[in-house]
Length: 142
View 1 (cartoon, rainbow, N blue to C red):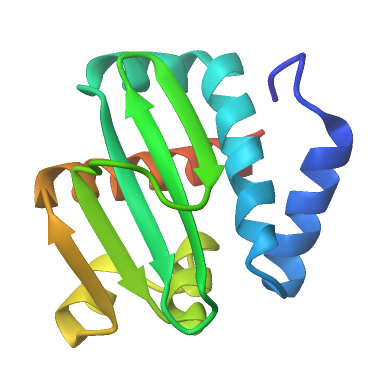
View 2: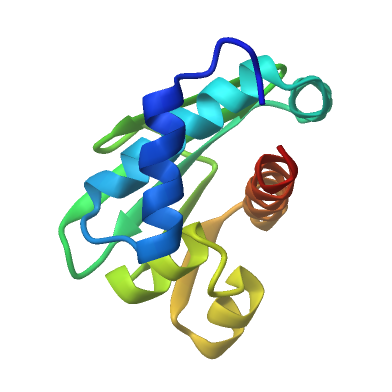
């Protein structure tokens, strides 16, 4: 894993992945690991530099919880709350969204079944999902 990655954060995320998400704040913990991995691991840095920057808004409909992700052109940033002018908005209930974040639920299947609603740029939504899948694969190899 990247030399400068926070060991406590890695342990927290490992625990979340093993025991499942308990709280929407777990998503913020995952995003912090994604951000650190994105600046430390060469394959992820390359992938991010190939993506044109966009901002996505995520909404957990039954928990009144939102967060945003800005990624591309070499950066991965995130924050809680609402962001202005996202290129897409993904909305799902807690069970679906948390399942997607830990890789238990496939985003395409959730979308097709109506459990995941997407408004806006589908290409950016797919790029986001693909990137998170790559992060998960690389982190599992570490």
